[in-house]
Image (tube, rainbow, N blue to C red; front, side, top):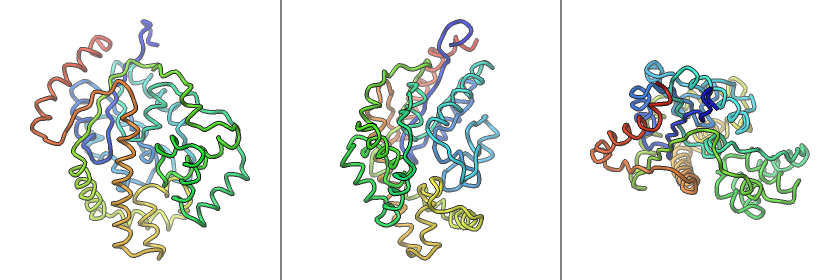
Length: 320
C-alpha cells in the first residue's frame, strides 16, 4: 500500500513476441512519466542481447528500464526471484511519483507478480531432477514435455517444451505432493496487490508469424550466431536455463554440429511461432485485459488517444 492506503499503480502491457510492445511501451512511458520493468524471463541475462530482443541503448536512454542485465547466464533466476525483484522496483518507482510499467511476454512472471502468487513450497528432490534432466538429454525436451502432459495437462499447455527447468519443476511438484502444479495454482485467490490496468496487443495470426520470421532474420543479420558463439566460448553450458532459450538452443546446436544452419533457422522460426501461440493461450485465460488488435496500424493509431485517456484517468491522480 502507498502512504495514503491505496494500492500502488501498475500499468501492464503484454502480448506475444514481435507484436509491437516495445514501441508502444516507449510512447506510453514518455507520455505518462513511466518507468519500464521487463517482464521477460530471458532479458535478465547479461550478454544475451540480440536473441532476447532487449530494448536498445537508445531506447533505454529515453525511458528508464529495470530487470535487464541483472545476472549472468549461469546464475539461477526463478519466477519467485522475479516477483520479489519486480515488487521492489514497483515500490521504488511509485514512491518517486512515476508510473511503474510491466512490459513483456512471460506469462508466469507477469501473472505471479500481478496477482501475488504464493509459490508452491513442495521441497525438492535433486535425484529426481537429475533423472528428469538426463531423460531430456537422451530423449529430447518434447519427450519430457509429454511426460508432464500425462500428469498435468494444464501445466503442459502453459509451459513451452524448451523451458526444461520449469517443466522439470512441474513434474517434481506432482511427484512430491501427489497434486498437479496447476491444481496448486488454481486454489489461489487472484487478488492483485496493485491497482492494475492491463493492455494486451494481438494481431492476425498469419501477420504475426510473418513478423516473427522477419524478426529472426533481422537477429541473424545483427549477429545472433556470433552472440551464441561468444557464450559457448565463455563456457556457458547448453544445459543452462538461459541457453535453452529460443535462438540460443537452436544456434548452439548448429555451432556444435548438431544440425545445419538452415535447419537451425527453420527450427527457430517454427519454435518461435509455437511459443507465440502459447503466449496468447496463457494471456487469454487472464481476466481484466483490454485487448487491442494492431493488425491494421492506422486503425490502432486511432485508438491510442483513448488508451492515453484511460491511463491518465486511472493513474493521473495517484501521481500528482
